[in-house]
Image (cartoon, rainbow, N blue to C red; front, side):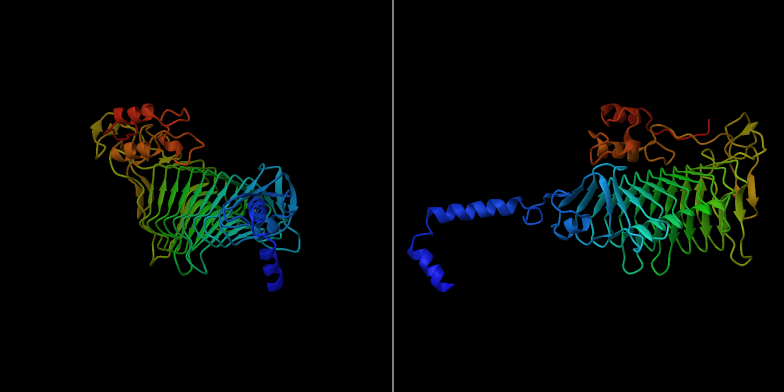
Length: 433
């Protein structure tokens, strides 16, 4: 080698010609997917025939774009990449029958979007997340055991977002959250699963998670389960419907089980379930208000241990009130804190009694309807609502700062009109009338 090197120098090859050759090679290397140090886009099957091969050759920050087609493989994502399908229904990842999990994510800050992820019913996870800050967006996930499994058993995971997915026909859970915190499960259609969204705590708690604006329908056993110390979660603005009719456990829309405390269950439509809400064994200090419980077989089912009752809060006092109960038989002839003043106020004159420890003191006469300018739905228009609109100001649905709740006039843009609408209602409190 030394002879060849000395010969090249002697012959003058290290002149302009050699420099041009090096520049050409550098340019070529920069165009090869997975070689350049800069983030790039790798296309399957153009650059690699399988998704896993593309992932194995990707660098941190790369995007793997998958063209329409059916890909029969299991996938492990162990580096920070974006995995994007060409179209939700046209880009299909189907598992080989002998395998278990379809997509396993072990790296942080991974995105998976735009796929149909299809099992055979014998598999485990559609997407198994064992990391943090990941986004699962706009997928169809079907015929697996768990659609999405947020798995915090081995180590702490947090801040994952599961949004805009259709998760259906799972043999177990649509979404399973095990000992994981600060995750968001938003705007999904979670239908025809054994369980809809299931929180479970063993060791670290499943806490501070948000379940918002989902359709959770036709689960065999239950729609949303907060189990075994699952605490300080928010279940908000969901449609929880037609759950529990074919099941043998809990058989309810929303379940609070075994010391699940300090959760907030707010503004949900809980209808046509075998049991609306189930509470058991010291699941106390939960705030449950401004939900519409309609046409459930039993509105609230409680099966408490006599030494460990569940005692929850079912209203926010007067005048904002509690929940709407379709089987409430009281009247609204009076008003006021003690319901002894002449004139109706949208609140029942007598409490809705669940049991001796659980009473909605101010049941609503009509289903809850939000105050439009109350962006964060805390029943008052204040500086927090203006701050939320300001945070999203100038955005539209494709913008990273977009939040539909801040689009007060629903014109798909957040601008001075939305700010003015909130300002015009400043200081207004929600009331039933």
